[in-house]
Image (tube, rainbow, N blue to C red; front, side):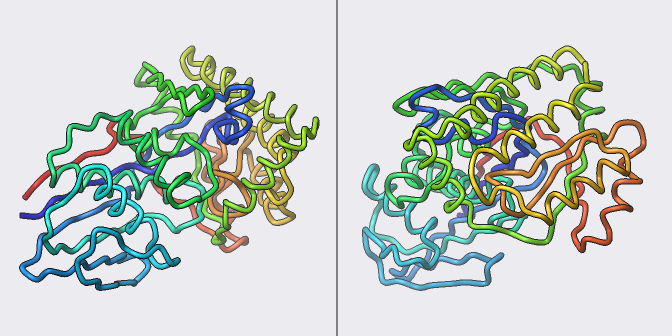
Length: 340
C-alpha cells in the first residue's frame, strides 16, 4: 500500500501580513487568496525493515533513521520530522518502518506558501494511512501548531487554511488562532478573466520569510504607528478586493493591488528592494495596472494584473530581469488524499 496526498499552493491577492501575530490577535486580520495548480505532494510507503526514511526529492535530500517515536529537529528536513513527531504524540503509530517522500512544485521561499502547504500535505498522507477523522479546520490548525509552536517557525496563518480548503477564500483571523474561512461564489466568467489577466512572475530569487515576518511582528509589539496603519489599510484592501471580484468590477483590481503594494512596503524593512521596484515599474510601463510581491516579500514570485492583452507585452518586458512567467490555473479543491 502507498498513501498519497497533494495540496495546492496559493496566490495571496489582498490583506497579506494581517494574518500574522500579534497583529491578528490584537486587531483581527483579513486575507483574500486563491489556490493554484501548483502542488506540494507527500507519499508514505510502509517498509519491511524497521527504519524511517525521509526523502525530499525537490531538495535532493534523504535521511535514514532507526525507528523512534521522536526524530531529532536539527535543521535537516525539519518540516517532515515535525509532522511525524506531532502525529506520534497526538495519535500514536505502530512501530513499523516507512518511507516518506515529498515534492513541492515551487522553490522554497518563493512566496506561494510552500512550507505550510507541504506540512498540510504530509499531515494528509499520515491521516490517510492512519484513517484519522480530521476535517479541513483540524488539519489546518494542526499544521499551524506544528510550524509555529512545535518548530518555532515565524509566519502567518493563511497558508495552512488555503492548502486545506482550496478555492478562492476570504479568511478572517481573530485572537487565539480563531480562523473563519469564507469560500467565495464567483461567477465563472469573472474567474476565467481574473486567471487570464493575472501574471505570475518568478524573480529567480528567494528569501527567508521568517526574518521579514519577525520585523513585522516587532513593529506591532513596539507600536510603530506607520507599520500598524499600513496593516489596517491592507486589511481594508482585502475587503475591497472581495467586492471587486464578486461584483465583476475586475477593472479595479490593478488599482487595488497597486494600493496594497505601496502599503506593504511600510510594514517592515526588506519587503521590497530596488530590483522589485524596477520590475514593478517596468511591468506598469508595459500595461500592468498593479501588482504585488507574493508572500512575506523580499523575493520569490510577483503577480501583476494585466488587462486586455497586455500580459503578452508585460511578459516580453520582464525577460531582461532573468526571471520567468509561470503558467497556472485556479483550482477549487484543497488537500486531496488517496491510497493505492
